[in-house]
Length: 280
Figure 1 (spheres, rainbow, N blue to C red):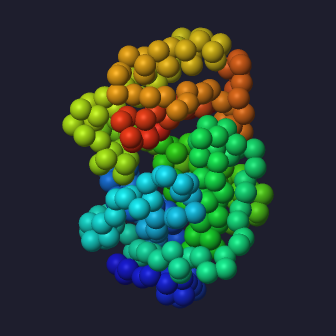
Figure 2 (cartoon, rainbow, N blue to C red; figure 1 turned 45 degrees about the horizontal axis):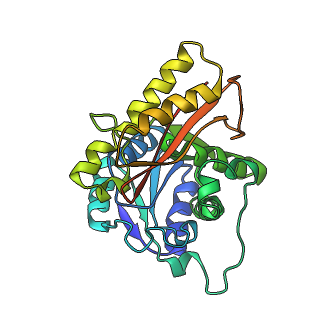
């Protein structure tokens, strides 16, 4: 496995693979890898001849007063996990490598990015689309792998890939959870012991909401109220949003019809966590 830091190095290696007729999978990450990331790498290894893992804390998807400066980083730990999982290349650029000093071109995916996290983090998905577009152009993967915990991100990226005719398939992989239901996240490291216990309320609330839908409830307001009420029983939890939207269009709906995404963003102490369920 190789670790490279420049676009030219990554491209040269991937071009050689392509000349040999090998298929390439890409797993875009911001590092501090956990079992959720490993599940993406594992699937990519199964489905491709070669696998690239990008590790890049993308500055342009963080707003003011967000956690860019303290976002957890450990390239040595990440390298070990990637090697054990069977990845072939880690692309770990500096921000200056990805964004020139006069960088001014961004990708805006439109409708799917304006609800949910797009409302409370208005520049977030512009930053995500821009960096993912760049990574897809660098790696030219046959398939790129994303976790369902970021379900809105998957919808936004798929829309971008379709609209810009990028020749890569976007693969959605299931959420990986701790034994108590908490979705794996690099930000879980921020949680104190008490906050870690409190964070399980997200999955508990969403499970109740999912059960309502499966039992035949069609009124989105009732599902939102149930999920919100359960989260509000936890004193350390502060709701950013609880919403039901169409999927993958990410449009607010009143009545459940077709595929839906029920998503939450909740502050546990100062840490913002997201989780969701999708019903096709």
